[in-house]
Length: 345
Image (cartoon, rainbow, N blue to C red; front, side, top):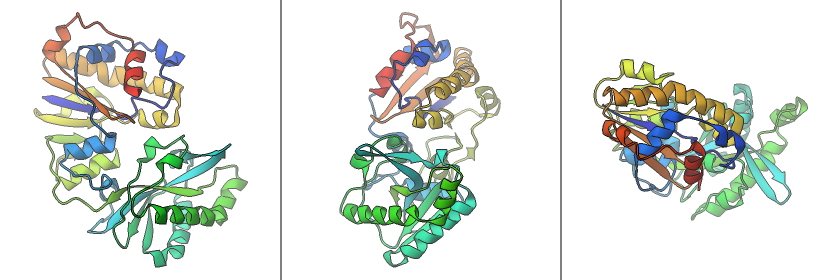
């Protein structure tokens, strides 16, 4: 049995040498990383890696929007979709910094009110906003957009200037974003949010545009994931799909022989927000719940190979280890901060 373990958020937006990382001791993970073979860096982050695995081609963007819409119960049809993530933009001196909806606690009523206003305003532009979830919106376009975008997770906490959409329709979308910001600034929902001390939802972040790919195939016997993109790809490929178990022990009891993809995304939120303390605590739990049980399963022959896939801004690294590799003691363990520093570079 071959387990592909995808771990988004392993390279947090923090200083890699910070004390909490320096003091982390995760012997199972360190041993797996040290004794594994490392592949060449694949360009792109989590979305790029997943789409390639499921034989989905990139046009200007990876088609994340229609795939996530499919996973969340929507019907992409043949329309062109963009993700329209509700965000808060904050002016810091001479730069505009983005905070995503994970920290905004948007209610369903607020999302409905804000998107209703956007739909009324942009009806003549052929844009239809859909509040798929309170913190995750989609927008249907009347015609495909010639647009290249950046994934939300690569922009959170950063100056948005160099990440704005570009391409033949880039300037049009800059105008649309300016109009959205003016419209949301004075919306009653945001006035009420500010009155109770909450950050206003003063913009969206458009990304992941495309139409639903027709030829999607899965190389896995089963896919285990909670995130919308992986689930959407599995659904489009008609691949067996289940939620990610809480622990590797639970997964091992259920998984049948074959090649499996398991997405463990517990680190992603803390990594995206730069919450080093939270990230460190979650990683320590993953050592107990996933890395040590998988190391033991590999040593005992319950699985034949473990491949750890680590997406980040620079691209995605893959570390692959088989049972025989565990005996390569000359590949001594290195502190975790060494790997985090290398992968964050």
